[in-house]
Image (cartoon, rainbow, N blue to C red; front, side, top):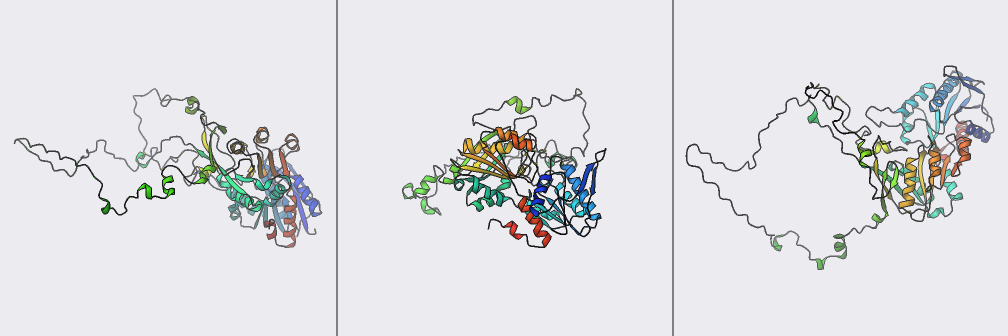
Amino acid sequence: MRGVQIFSGNSHPRLADTICERLGTVPAKANLGKFANGETSVNIGTSVRNQDVYIIQSGSEKINDSVMELLIMISACKGGSAKSITAVMPYFPYSRQSKKKSHRGAITARMLANLLTIAGVDHVITMDLHASQMQGFFGKPVDNLFAEPFIARWIRMNVPNWKDAVVVSKNAGGTKRVTSLADTLKLNFGIVTTDRRRPKVPVAAMTDSTVFFDAVDEDPLPKETHPFELHMHSSNRTAATPPIPEAVEPSTPPPAQYLLRPVTPPAARRPSELDAEFEYTDVRVRDVITGRLVQGQLVDDDYRINEESQSGGTTPGAGSSSHDNTEAVSDPMANSMISIASSQPPDHALGGSFDAVESDDEASVSNGHADERTITLVGEVRDRSVFLVDDMIDKSGSWIAAAETVVKRGGASKVYCIATHGLFGENSLDQMEACPSIDHIVVTNTFPISPSMLRRSKKLIVIDISSLLAESIRRHHYGESVSALFHLND
């Protein structure tokens, strides 16, 4: 390919080498390092004047270093009079922070998109964004490629009896991705959702604000029980005769001829009407299975939570000051609901829904108390293989909970955990490896996975998607249409 320079960052050099090998070239020379104080150093070792530059830089464990390295490389090529600069980012960093999850949160993905544009990028190629609406953050063209065709092809070639399997989403936010894969494979789909059993928390109302309501009557006038009753007042005269209570006549139902719709006798009813009075007739209810999650673990229905751990070991009012007789002067602005933080719990998300916080890969960690949730499985998975699908695997809690639910409660025969990006934060891969309910873990190579991790894991399977990225680069350089890359299943 003439007039093309492909640079590789330090985040995923193996993927960059594979892409260049498919394109029949080698990565261009660039010196990447760090100064003694930790600053990133970039020196482009070849001429990029009037060249189409492609910089391959995915996320990595050192995510901030990878982002800063990419920005500096873009700026260096822009200063070198490059014809066009394309950032190839198989995994887009900070993609989970594409919306506000608290009232003072930041939309970091939009900020990163602005930084790339300011640095001088002309085009962005990425894969399976966490939210497809992120493409609107950019003022430049974005190609959001999909790994679904490669995953579907792997399932057809490697999973026995895959036509009887079920595609299951492990959260409500990934249903669109799951239904797309199910339509491609012509399979049934299901969903696993977790519902928080919310504790009773005091909710501040507008009546707590001393700014808006600074004068409240402590002794309001008593309300009359019978406001329309006639009262007889007398001064020094004889006392009034107490009213004679009227006898309450028993209420009788009106005759049948005065009813708008006469009551149908049981003998004249249809069988469906008789059954509806005693039980549900909707057979779809049988496919709904519920369970209990306590601190991320699936427990039996009769499991009892330790009350001491749930209460956190503190007694209300135990930490009060010794000066009980001193009356503190309240600040009107401190008591105002408008002037302080929201009255909702800290993990409450914008829009009035707790699901906005839980739409990501993991649920929030319990803060010193037993976090109990209700997990629900919708769909028939008994004696079938289950494909748990999401866009990334970061932590293992939700994956293990969903796998145990479909196996122990649903009766599934095998579980395949499938995702595009295998981040595997902390010890998540080892935890999923130790889970007996998970049989295989399938990811692509958009995110770097160390060779030692590949060696010690017997369940991990990595799908190569370098051919898709290489074809995207080739079509973009020659000005060909890339629409065919979005419809590989057709």
